[in-house]
Length: 434
Image (cartoon, rainbow, N blue to C red):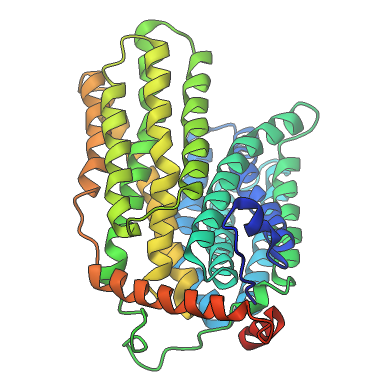
């Protein structure tokens, strides 16, 4: 399915056959995740008239979505995207429509809202981890895969920025339940286009594991030690990044800067992350991924700790932007390590563990920093938030797994080089994968 490319650039990534179509379809479906939270929160608030009820329902929606993610990913690995991902997406979309209808109906029971939201979250299709698994199948060249993951991460960052803006435009002219229905349509249409792409067919089902051990020389279900480092770092970065939101609000409140300044600081974090992700993808790193990951995690931590010492808004913006420069590279590298630690049939769930770790870390960070801000000076709170990411840099990597993958990468490079000969065509490689 893969095509050997001599120039490892972002353009080369998107020139891979079916890459643009598949990636675009995945982005349409993933845009739903950028619109659904705000739409659903506004709909619940208007329907129930209670922030407490709306918060509880959203907590159930988020909890089932996050903590059942590895299980849903295992279904995709076991049965393939077409048999597992599409039913999930259609059921998720249907439950979102039920929620929208319930929010429009006065007097709907709070229990009904909570149960429906919990069921909807449980069905959230793992489009991000599956797309990253598709990238890994399309691009055996690790340099190209690094660029693909960087593009994927930056695009996801932009989706979560543009999604709420889209909802803002909707609620200016219509009810927020329209945003919930739009989220349902996006995920259904995007997933349908994604699973019908020829590139997605390259993800062959792993089948039900008959033994607990991995295949010889490759990762498998028993690769806990190999996944420990990327999962812990992803969770720690999630904790640190989520803490920034409330810390910046507190910073602005202490200095009477107004809520408008908060948006600028958080935008600086996103811009820094996007720039860092693109630069990381473009650099031809000579060091292995497991050696780079601690550096990126420590960079996030040190910059956030320095942000707590900022005397004013400008220095805070610069410090937070510097922290952002390490965020996307840290997460992209964590996903790369997760991918190289397991066999192809387990890629979706390996990526889902990192995804779950980020989301769980963000939930824990948001709750913990709220307690800290009321008890500790703000610079100390920034230092604690940064220390979480810096401490994750101390988690050792599985060097045996890295060495094994390096050997496999060398073999893949030899295969790619030989496939450039006239006698070996891209179509033969494609037929071997399908």
